[in-house]
Image (cartoon, rainbow over all chains, first blue to last red):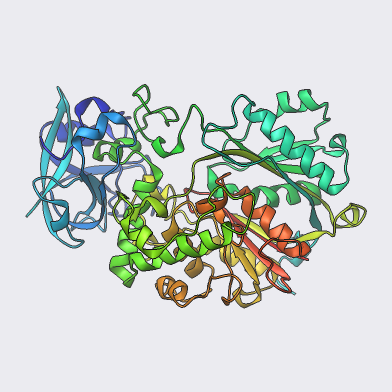
Amino acid sequence: MQGVPPADVIRLMPNVWTEPFWRATAEHRMVVPRCTACGTFRLPPTPFCPSCASQDLEWVEHDGRGTIYSFTVIRHAVIPDVLDALPLIAAVVELPGTGGCRLVGNVVGVAPEEVRISQEVTVDWYDVREGETVPVFRLA
Amino acid sequence: MNEGDGLTMRDRTAIVGVGATPYYKRGESVPQLPMELAAKALLAACADAGLDVHDVDGFALYSMGFDTSLFAQWLGIDVRFAGMLTGGGGGAAGSVGLAAAAIVSGQADCVASIMTLQQAASRFGASYAPRGKPGATYSAPPSPEGSFIQPSGLMGPGQMFAVLAQRHMHRYGTTREHFAEVAISTRNNAIRRPTALMQKPLTLDEYFDARMIADPLCLFDFCLECDGAVAVITMSAERACDCAQPPVYVAASANGGAGKWGQAITWFGMPDEYFASSGHRTVAADAYRMADIGPADVDVALLYDHFSPMVIMQLEDYGFCPIGEGGRFVADGNIRWPTGSLPVNTHGGNLSEAYIIGMTHVKEAVEQLRGTAVNQVEGAEVALVTGGPASIPVSNLVLHR
């Protein structure tokens, strides 16, 4: 895939709270945790609801459509391993219907000059290695 | 009387000494050891104050500090307080507040806040790069939270703050010319100071010709990468009067931040009204209340400038202009020394003097209030110093003469 860092610089480290998210992405599905006590969504998944401190949650399927909330174009390689992948568009994407939850991922398949805040995007999947997939986004 | 006045530390302590090593470009302080630099800075601060190093009985550190046990062993210091603010560069100014708190609570009498930095084998610019990769010499270990950021290629703080800057531009109409004004005005201050690493003026053309690092930030929006150490010694207001220099009183210091700010650039989940900010709004209110002053009382501001847009956001969060107006505030010349309404980073800041994780800002505030600064603000009575916009805690310090 173009527009993403090489696989060997990506290190996923799930814990018991985030593992369901990554298990879903490996199946090319997006799920977002929602507090069953008060209905508040949260990302990344954490042990407590920031609104009511409940630990009970459910995993809600999301269609992966979102809007670019902000972004940067990475043009300088802070480590040599990413040099060949530059430029990288790293975007913060807001997910409608989640009370403002956001995901961070590359916007792929577009020139950096064409990216704007508020553009609509849809999720795609970067299979980093067997069993590990991260979300990326394409302009809708 | 404010509620809680009986518990305030306002004016009960003072900075009595400041000291620094020379400032070096990244790696050029070798073969000195990092903690050796810290000791040299402390000895210089003691000399400034007219103290013996064995008068020091406490350490108030931040940004992971250093090994105070070995440091005390090296210098033969008997320690009564060794505390540290959690987090990173956000705690710079607050480390002096921690020293004041230790003194007011009776735990120690003479507390040193010290930062030492040597980036020979490590670069903060690759803080979130994967460990073990070439160039990833100062890397946080992989974390469950980082797994939601790092796969995008965001591996350095500047790239992450660029995302906040982009949002600020979108929301408020801030421009790269505004960022340039921060960089250029800071450089103008630096070139008058022999201690500054940057000694040539920066023009607007040079700014716009510079390579982009992470849009919208170019090379000159980034702070320097340096080695060096700075030490600041705080004592009770009474004992400060016996020292060699005029006391510089600690009017207030606050550290912390809102939960909705949290990890900030390693989260990106801050609510919209908070996202394009410095994270300082709660500590600004705390400090103004403790000092019983407002923004109009501040004569000179030493604002942590790791990235130029973050100066603009701090100007807003400390009430020097309305939220969203920071860009236009700097464009109007307000932060220029000596003509502006609020001279900012008269020492040249992290951008152009040296990056010692914010402690040069404390040193400059002390010199301003002693009346000995190179770029002296005439009649300066009150100085505001801030720690870095960063994950919690962020911090500040209000000093007066």
